[in-house]
Image 1 (cartoon, helix red, strand yellow):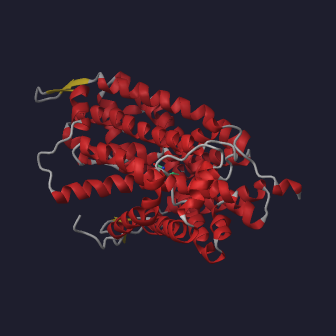
Image 2 (cartoon, helix red, strand yellow; image 1 turned 60 degrees about the horizontal axis):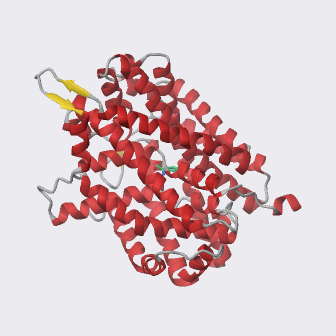
Image 3 (tube, rainbow, N blue to C red; image 1 turned 135 degrees about the vertical axis):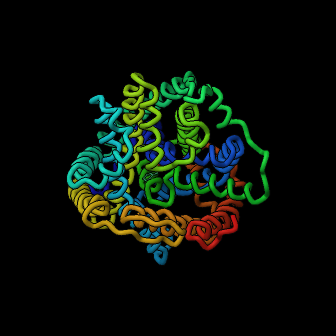
Length: 468
Ligand code: PHE
């Protein structure tokens, strides 16, 4: 019995910061942040993003980590500890990672496939038209890749908080940072003359990225940029999916939360920014400004392989390093999603880690296979309320990101801001004896500004708010 009562904890602050940053730095940093920055006229997006990170992001992240540390519970049971009637919020918060895990692993499998293909020197084939479509619609390979990626994530989770998540993050995250910096520097040295004789360089691409283009700024476009930055930040910090509550519950009471939260935000933002320095100059040099029109899978699996192929011999090596880096980013995020579910099952049903991880592993595997088949024998096209069409993966992504996550975040703001009261969180942050900075800001944000912003985001993501 003793064993169940003693909760694991991260050995040190560094382990916690790197694990949480590992969760935050994911596919979103790489395939969406640079695209939004380019689309929204460079610098303005970056400035708004940083301001939002220091206010809105700081509020949500602090709240979740403090809820975790105070209750020493994972999401499924944490919310109910404050008020029994609010247990439902924990159920929704736990449902989000249950839904995300299978399709995130399917995408992780695609990344693994590209990494292996570059490793074996198949860069030119990857750049061919239709390569990506024929791969994801094939019968067996996507499922094999899913199993390998899920297996690797499950292996880390099976090993537990210290021997698994903490040790893994301490190796992977510095390696990821190193790769990002190296590829970004390389990207800035690029130069290419196209068939029309026009020469473009990486440094010119950098200007497109960082210098604000305010030439056609209107009130409407400003708000649209603001909402883009907010949505991106919200997704990037891994809040509203139970993860930060789970990781927070493993933080020791004497650890300085203030400092750790700042470090997590800095890590996440720096990697997102550098992902832009990696991608925008390279795409600009070889495909011009129009090349930045793609985001998500089409940027990563279709546009970038073409850019790497245009680099000639170096392209295979850069492609290999790039996909190794993406693989690291995706793995640490998948580990965190799985841990949120596993930890919830352990806390709620008093199961062992092995049992909980096996259950979640099987759910992710079965649903993940269905997601793969969604491009194959189960292919269909569904229209989503925001006007796009998609397959099973897109439906699951839509439900979790556009519907459930905003509900969890709004619910958390109401519960903490108005029922539990912000002081509870502030006291938790200050428990280790350090003063919490931006206290007043936190209180105003959690009670008024954050919920209002989240409602706007929610209305936009379900397609009700279409003006901006
Ligand atoms: N924060 C991650 C990103 O930016 C998102 C994520 C984390 C998604 C964990 C799922 C699970 O990509």
